Length: 372
Image 1 (cartoon, rainbow, N blue to C red):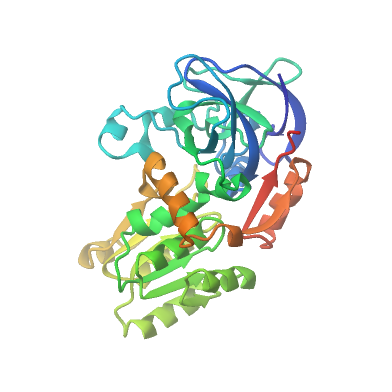
Image 2: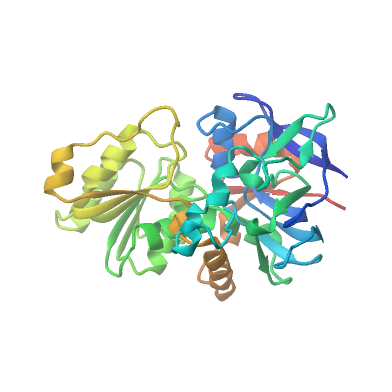
């Protein structure tokens, strides 16, 4: 079948909206009609080369839609099911899944290669060239074939254009606070970078009972939204945040720091490390250039003050547990999704959407697919 999709053909290019050929689902796979896809910064890393996949690749890894058909052997889903796609597949039986670390599932080894679990591709361009799928999904396509390991069934009455965000940014940010940082009631938390992930770290820290949630971002809009969704204080710079936290804690400093900036760099890691207390934790959720180092800290302070630096993927959670959990929090009104969406776009407006993100105009932009 044919599908329209946004394709990245190389570092520094714009997204190219084009028609592709899509193969039918094979064993363990499903055909999904995507309703909506979030514009996540990780796909911008594909354009800049900070996170280079195999090119060409259909972008998008944060989406929700409807199952149109299933391949042989599929047991979790049937046609007509509404789903949220997890950007990390979960097989349920590898070493990592079986020991409670399903966010590190071995099936995810193909995320940057763009092939599905059998190592082959479902998207092809007009010349017959294989086109990969970002995170084995490709949610910037009207239709895609994905593994059932990547699909979480949800109730039919949920607004897919809202809950699409639960495929990546929401659980990644929320889990960075709740799982990776292990925020406790009374904690003082500082979060660097209030985009689509950082704003959900704010929500997670607030829901976990933090006494002080300090959101750091140079963009006034993002600080304003952070205050609406759980931040007790905001700061435009790391220096301002450090002074504020020193005052709030009477010199003890922050219990935990979470780094969710668009591109991680040495300075922000150093700022976070210097702003946490003895025994405190820095959680690094953002991504930097894969070929350079972004962490350079004083080893004596690491040792003498027993500080800790922790990486976090998918908020260190379990997609098949945390995505339904996020849905229930949304239903209860405890987790805000509607308020995160600043602007919606058509697929043809994808480059405009990413420029708006880079210009600091959006907390989260969302593509609404037209599959009528």
